[in-house]
Length: 196
Image (cartoon, rainbow, N blue to C red; front, side):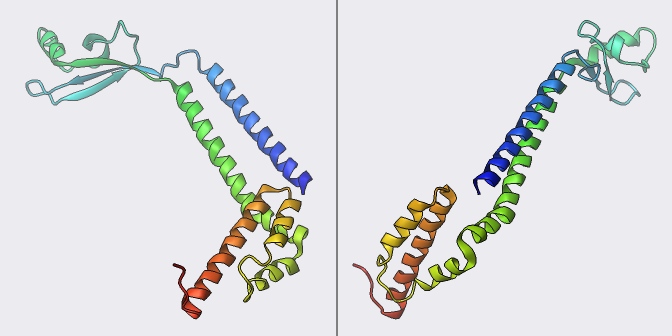
């Protein structure tokens, strides 16, 4: 059991290390500004018979104005200045490296959660059957019977001490709680005895 658990831990560690390496690599390759990371956006309202439009160009901050971004110019002559005064131009910059890093981190966490789900649904029941056998699980269900609620507390404690896996300890506490709840249900519904 310890070998399989350590293998899973090593695999998860390797997977997370690989994702961190890819994250660092993508951050280094995107340090140079990509032309898609910067743009100038000009919003021009309607002017005379011309409908309002939005213009986008990949230009630098100093060239972010109507004269460099609005192409083709819908007006001619002296109307150009009046048209450009109505346009509102904004320089926009984004970090595609941060976006990529966030997506990689999100997918890494999602992958780890999926691996953990596979472990819980497939491997854990197989390990429990191998270690404790099917007969012990049936016997623990038969122990509930009409005994006193804490009659086999010593056995439960000794079994929980012998197991080193935390999941097994939690499972035993849950089984003990279920037995206590079932005993309480019997006393309330069958025997009509309520604790005061």
